[in-house]
Length: 164
Image (cartoon, rainbow, N blue to C red; front, side, top):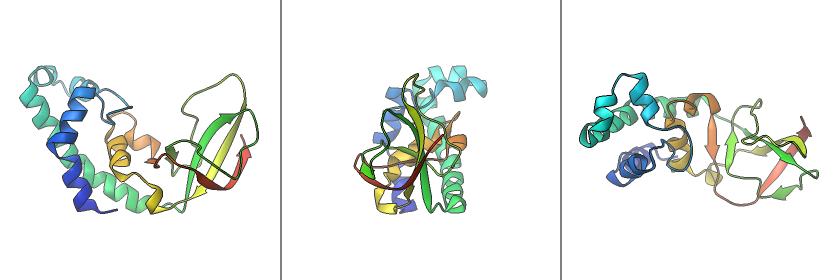
């Protein structure tokens, strides 16, 4: 993980504009950016596009170093994902991109059918989409709690799984 590169990329106008246009910290998922502005009594600033952009950059500048420190402290050896499956998981498959360093993670989506499994994979720095991971962790509401690592969309090999 190249922190300098990640910081420059996340603070680029391209990424900031994507956050603003999607209205979400994680661009494709996560909580709405307006929640931050409401909770901090900044509705006026949210309505002003230049102030909104400036405040988002300030938030990212403050938060990104906290995220880097969190990842360093977590130092995961294993990543976890909880999913509902109709059949026992295969040893190698694409189980999705959202993983966590927390073993007590919960499924992204609750299903009434299928069995919940907790999947475990070995942490591999090369499997992590670091830009999307940092964006996810910027999320004002969910970022700190989820300890999310976003993988590239590909097959991974399980080291183990268990029914929950």
